[in-house]
Amino acid sequence: MKLFAKIFIVINLIIILVLMVVYFSNVYYLKYYTSRLVISDLKELTERISNVKSVADVNDILKVASSNEINMVIKYNNSSFTVKQTGVPMPPDLIFYAEERLKYKDEDEFQYVHPAFRGTFVVVSQKYENGYIIAGTLIPSFNKAIRVISHNMFLIVVVFTAIGVLLSYVFTKYFTTRIKIISESAHNIIQGKELKVLNSKDELGELSHTIKILKDSLGRLENMRRDFIANFSHDIKTPVAVIRAYAETTRLIDINNEENIKNNMLAIENECRKIEEMINQMVELVKLSSKKVRVNWEELDLGFLVRNILNKMSKLFELNGKEVSQQIPSEPVIIRSDAFLLERVFYNILYNAAIHSTEKTIKIDMQVNNGETVVFIKNYTDIKEEDLPFIFDKYDREGHGLGLTIVREILNLLNIDYNISIENGIFIFSLKIKRA
Image (tube, rainbow, N blue to C red; front, side, top):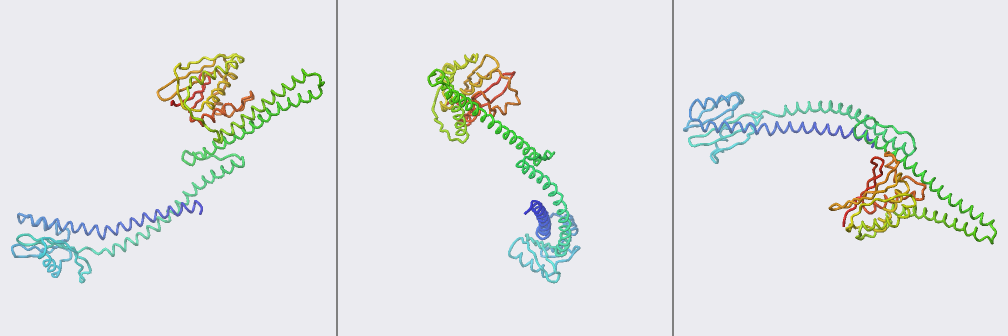
C-alpha cells in the first residue's frame, strides 16, 4: 500500500472515530446524565420541604418546582393535597404506587413507564414523622432528539469526511513529494549523481541534509580509498623496482666481484624489509578493524612504560634533531591495559611527532587525577585545523602511512578516550586512561 493511501485512511479513520465519540457521548448525556440531574433536583426539593419551618418557605419551594415543571403530592397531618404545576401531572395510579412503596422504606426513587403518556416519569418520595412528599416529573422523550442528532451527525460526517479527503490529499501530496525527493537522493548516492536538498528546518529537512552529509562523507571515503590504493601501490612498486634494478645489476656483475654483489644484496634486503613492514601494517590494520586481536589485560605502570619507550626511541629523536621534554610522575601510575598494544600506540604517536614536528621540542605531560590518567603529547605542526578530522585516514609516504590509523583502532579496542586538537600551532594528542 502506498504511503498516500495509508495517510489518507488513517486521517479519515481518526475523523470518523472522533465524530462517533461525539455522537455517542451526546446520546449518553441525554439518556443517562440528564435523568440523573432530574433525580438530583427532585431529591433536593423533597429534602427542603421536609425541613421547612414556615408557610413562606413552602411557597418558595413550590415556585422552584413550578419553574422546573415538577408535580408534587404532599401529605401532612393525615391531610393530603396535590400541587399541580405546569407540565404533565402525575396520574393517580402512579401516586398510589409511590404511596405503597413508602410503606416499606423511608425514601425512594424510581422510574415509572406509563403507557397512556408514552413517556417515563421520574419519581422521588420521602417519608417523615407526620406525612410524606411525592415529587415527580415526566422525562421528555429522547427519541426525536436522537433522530435529529443522528441526521445532523450524518451530515457532519459527510462534510468532515470531504474535508478530511481534501486535507489528507494536500497533506500526503506535500509530504510524499518531499519523501520522494529524499528517496531519489538515496538512489542518486548509489548512481553518483547530484542530490536535491530540502530547504526546510523540520525533520524531513534535517534528514535530507543528513543524507547530503552522508554522500559527502562517502565521497571523501571513496577518494581516500583511491588515494590509499594508489599510494600503497606506489610504495610497493618503488622497492620492487629497486630490487629489480639491483637484481639486474648483480646479474651483470663479475661473479668474482664479491663486494659489489654484497652491497647489492644488502640493498635488496633493505627494500624487502620495507615491503614486509608495509604488508605487516596492512595485516595488523585488518585484524584491528575486524576485532580479531586478542587483548591481554594486565596491571602495568604507565609511567614506566612511557619512559621505556622514550629510551628505545632516543636514537630516533637524536637523528631527527628532536628533544623530548617529559613530565612523568616518579611514583607508579597503575592502569589496566595491554602493554604490547599500548606501547604500539605511544610508539606510533611519538614517531609521527619526531618525523613531522616543525620545531625541535616534543613535550609529554602525564597528569594523574583521582580515577584517571591523562597523557598529553605536544609538538609543533603545520597541519591545518580543517584537516584534523581526516588525520587518522591520511596516508603518509614516510614508511608509516598507517601509523595513526592503527593508533585509532587500538585505542578503540582498549576503550581509551582520545582527542586531537591544534592550539597556537601546537598539535596536541591527549589520551584519557582509567586507573586500575
